[in-house]
Length: 487
Image (cartoon, rainbow, N blue to C red; front, side, top):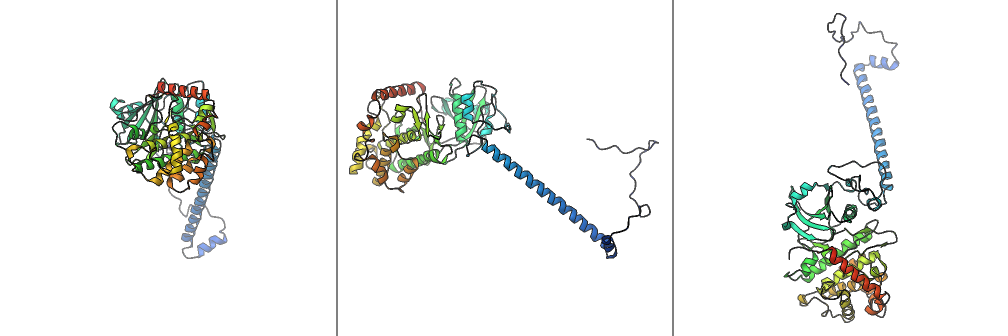
């Protein structure tokens, strides 16, 4: 609205505003009140009266303003609580988005309506577009990148910046304009699971924050392109350092440090996230190491939220051959205890220096776990670990720490899922804050038949087990050619 025009006289000339009224032109005021009489009779009464009047007015305005602000703030908090209760029950991080946008470059404000969980929308949706914005799931620190930005950061995704390749795509190193190094996971556009993995990782990692877990920096959705941007962990993976060709021998203190750090990260997923998170692909290649060899658990692409029953029935083989629990092979149910078994395999790798599966052997040949079982039993009985320990260490290890790690490994790879300990228990044992007796009771032959190779294996149908191992190995060989860094 524009300002009002100045009034005009009938002769067309400009009429200035009238002068302020003088005492002679003022209309006689009504009979003064006693208060007016008081101010009029008091020296300088009129002056102080106006001041008091103005102070009262200002105070009234301030009180009204504060009251209105309080009401507005309270109302917003109520709405916020209502939105949180209407979400999918996740209390950690931002509310989950319902899906993906076909082309996301700018932040879009979320609809005030309650949204279904991201994974539910992805799995239930039949129409690929239009799909709402991913930004709603992300924290402010996480950025939406354009394809051009990530292409420039990685030198057009050059082979020189290639860090690894998996079943879903490639991982390249990149450098952002601000100098920050990142790892760019470029999902294969032809992969039918590409959107599923993106949804799973964004939904989970945006809620997960722990020093022993890899952090999500941002993402890119541009047409058919799907990319995730992580913090760059410069020292490659445990698999690279432990099994890489011509690599220096990893000393025992470093192995112990990696075991404890990765155990803490996995314990956080299992016991401190709500709902609980099953990683589903714990292995040495998914444990990244920084320059100080601090461990960070990575790759949540196969992760699922754990239901209240702690189980999830999968219709396809998940995880990596050599790390899969026998109960998963027999039932198809993935549980938190499946992760515990896989972590036990990682502990055996750290102890023995061996890989979980020797490709020169048959699919059900002597896996590292089956080879280690009798040696673990004897070592825990007589305290002599020489036949079990990586010969490259030349007995350069702490006997007490070795006993703790071997006890944890034996408990984790128990045939019985029920007898596998929680990861928080593993952390306490590795730290030396919990007695080994509790774990030993579950794995000694006289107390448990679940750990023994022959007895424990008999509870599963051997033909079904053989079929599963063969299917898992073939699936892995077809879907991935994993690389963990330069040779």
